Length: 165
Image (cartoon, rainbow, N blue to C red; front, side, top):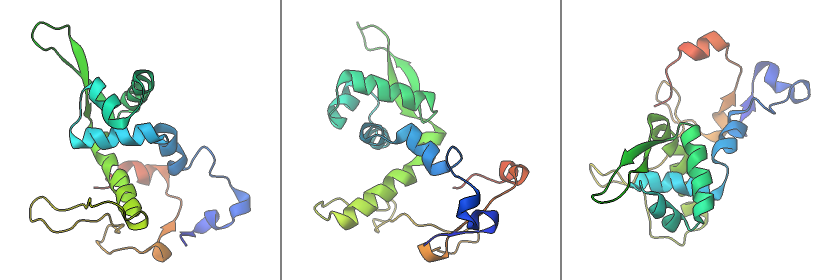
């Protein structure tokens, strides 16, 4: 179990509602279609109709999800025009969208482990070895769930710290 440290340890004295990064992330990508659109974007899908078809959602739902993901900064619109056609937008991952992908891959790995009905595996393109999503501290140590802690960080320290890789 993940330990709460400092003033967070007294669970009755505070509430994470409105402050929890999990809650905020789920507010952005907490639908099946949003997660699958992010998966498809990482696989290289950029066109509106391709997202709708590959995710299996209506054009209206696709439009709503793509709009939300653009507004959240995970995808960006880029105009393109095919010869003889009107200008349209395609959707590409932003740096924030690329940084989000370990979340998607963690879900992939969890699903593969608990619903082992897929031949799909993550692998390192460079050498072909299997790949996995790990939690590590900034010193490079693997951190198992029972050694993970949540603590408060002063805002000034958080703003100056480097984003996770």
